[in-house]
Image (cartoon, rainbow, N blue to C red):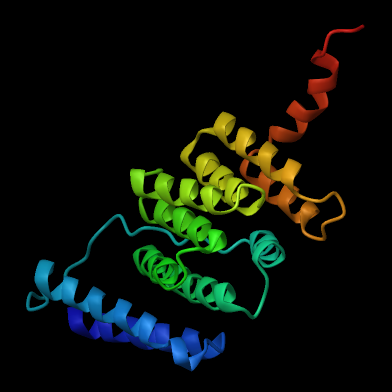
Length: 217
């Protein structure tokens, strides 16, 4: 029964890739991810055992359209980065954050000098680790900043990961950097703020109180 479920999952992934029109020249990447998942299941799982009810099925986080809009504004559409981000989105929709992280890991191996892909890898790794920032995720964010310190994408993504982990103070610090690096007339700036407010509803009140807290001169 386990292999039947795995086969259904593989077919679902293929259907999603067709739906998003994922470039066929890059199909080897998700195929490799599925093969690795199958190998891991055969090694660590017990596919020969009969199925039985289990509890504690992890919920799937819906993709935020505002976050996707920001990502496209920061890193572009219909380019090399876009293809990998869309593939990772497909894995996330399928409830497989580990495969989403695998996709982004393959992306940085193909383009190790791309800060957007490193930032995406950091966020994917954090999601895979239950919204906790592992040393690997932190390294990915640091690498993204190192590659392009003036790009607002890495601190923005780092802030998202920090907010999801519960570190709102750290998130606000990173988001402040991102907004400073973002042109005031950028089309995606309002979407960035929308994402921030969803993750940190108290941010607006804190911003309103900040000028009032400053000492009068």
